[in-house]
Amino acid sequence: MFSRAKMKEAAKLNFKKNYSGSIGATVIAFLPSFILGILGSIFEGSNYAQFYSWDFSYIEESLLPLSLAYSALSLVIGLLFVPVLQVGYNKYFMKLRGDLGTTATEVFSPYKEGNWGNVIFVTIAVGFSIFLWSLLFVIPGIIKAFQYALVPQILASDSSISSTRAKQLSKMLMKNHWGELFVMYLSFLGWIIISSFTFGLLYVFYVQPYLQASIVEFYSCRRADLINEGKISPQELPSFGTDWYSPDNPNGPFQTTTYNSTNHFSGNFASPPPPAPPFQSPPLNQSFGTPTVNHESKSISENPAYELKEEITEQKHTDNIEVKEEATETEAETLNEEADIPENEDNL
Image (cartoon, rainbow, N blue to C red; front, side, top):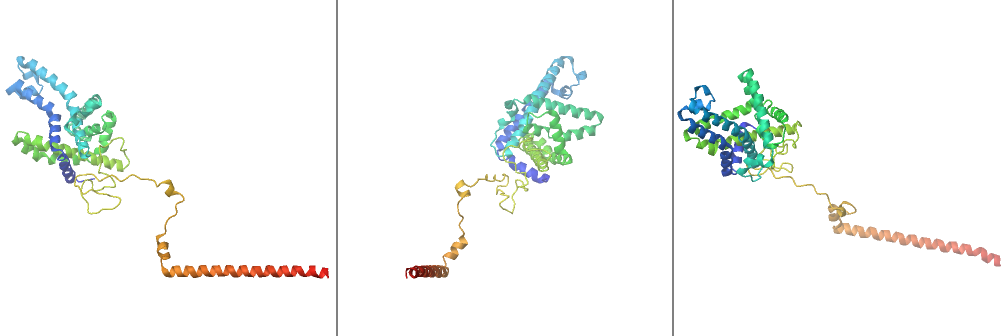
């Protein structure tokens, strides 16, 4: 498990890979909420606080139609656009960290895939569960909100997943780690306060992409932990591109001083290691019947002393064969002479 500082450092380098695309994705993802805020301020003016609170008892009768129209528009945009664009926003940063060359239009990917209806249903189911836990007291609702905090990232990995399984996976990912996510959010509080003095420009152009990339990095690290522990399969929560959190690359995207044949760490600080070359079986003509060259025997045979010894041995072997052949011929002649003696005696 990486430390929060390392995850934030990797996230910063990731969103800077395509800085303009990250800014564009941020603008697209938060555009519906920005439009609602602008319309609310125009419609209500000084009474915007009461108008936005949905408290109709304090609204003048002449503003009631506008308030109802704004409430209906907020409901439609909040259900049809905000959750779907947030899932696509997370998918953009997932593909960005996988070096897939994604663009800001990746925010609309749930609509392109056709699973935007399931994304809306899962978002409503999760929100309803958090609401029910909040009825007990505030703290259980906050805890449940952190347990389900990674549902958008899960939907970004698989937008067709069911609400029940998405909540189960989020609870598994956040088990004993929801405090770390809370501290990560808390670490951006200073940036958010500073952004208020820049009319939100710093938030759009730096803080929000930095924050979102950090959450995606946290999710990716937790996903790798569960896969290494055997609790989930990589196919259930697929990653995009090469995921550097693996047993073969324990240092993640960061440089290491060691290098061996197993861990081919990349020299680039924020790039995943290159994939291992695929296994290639040897050709058949090399697998069967091909003699192997013994370089040690070859070097010995090239020695002059060794060659002289081989010649003497071969000569001795040849002489022995010739001696044996002569002895055999002599024995054969002797036997033939002995065989001829009885025939001569009979003739006499």
